[in-house]
Length: 345
Image 1: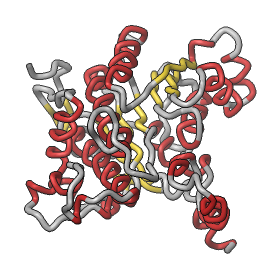
Image 2: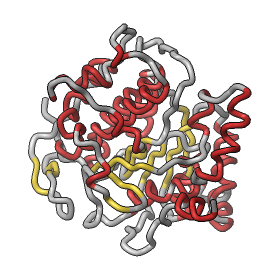
Image 3: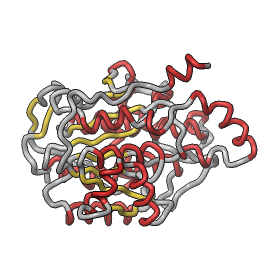
Image 4: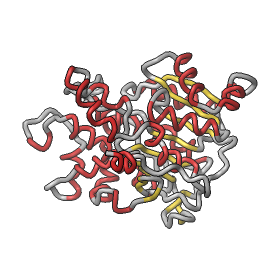
C-alpha cells in the first residue's frame, strides 16, 4: 500500500528550465477546484496574469478559493494593488454564447495576445444526457466546447507564439476502430443514439472519446503551426466524477480507492510543467505524463484521426477550423510553426 501510494504521487514540476511567467497572460478553464485551481494558483505564484473561469460558484467565491491556494505574499499582493492580476469570468462550455462572450472579453482586455490557454474544464456524466446542442453531455462539455473556445481564441494565442495545453487521459487509448482510418472519427466521436454496439452510451466510453478528441486537437494544432500539447495528469481525486457516483455506492467506492489517486496538487504538476517549460524544451504535438513528453503514451489512432476530429467538432460547434498561411520549423520540437499571423480567408 505504501509503495502504491508512493508511485501514485507522480513527479514534481521541475524548477530548472522554466521560463519567466511574469507578464504572461494565462487562461485556465475550470479553475475553481481540483487541478485547475492548483494550476491557476501556481501560475499566479510565478507572476503570471491569470484569467480563471468558473461555472458552479459565484465570482466572489471563485476568487476566494484561488486566493486561499496562493502563497501568502502573493495573496497580499492580489488583495492590494494587483487585483487585476487575477480575473474571474464565467464560462459554460456547452453554451456557445458563453464561449463567444469570454473570447471577446479576453481579446478586448488583453489585446496583445494570450500566452497560455489551459483547457482543464470537463466532466464525466453518470447518465445519458443530451445538451441543447443535440450532443451527449460529456462529449459536448469535454471536447466540443474546448474545441470551440480554442479555435475562437487561436489567432490571439498565435499572435504571441503562445501555447495551448489540453488535459487528456490515458483512457483516450481505449478508442479503437475496425473501420478504415478515414472513418475512425465517425465510429468514436460522432456520437448519436444508435443501436450500433460501438456507438452505445457508456460513461467511460464517452469520457474516453472526449479525451481522444482533446488529444487529436492538440496534435492537429501542432500540424497547423500552433504550439500545443496533451497532458495526462494521472488518476487524480477531483470533482470530475461527481456525476458518476452521487449515489450510496459512491460513498464506499471512493474511500476504497482514494489512497490510489493523486491529490490535485500532484495531478497538476505535469500540466504546470507544460505551461512553464522553456520554448526550446516544449514538445509541441506531444503527450506529457509525469512532467515528460511520452511519445508512446499517445494512441496511434490520433495521427490518423486528428483532422477529422477537428472537422467534426467544427460542424457541431459551428466554429470553423483556423488555418494559418505559412509555416516554418519550430525550434526544439522539429514541427511546423506558423510564420504568418494572418489566418487564411
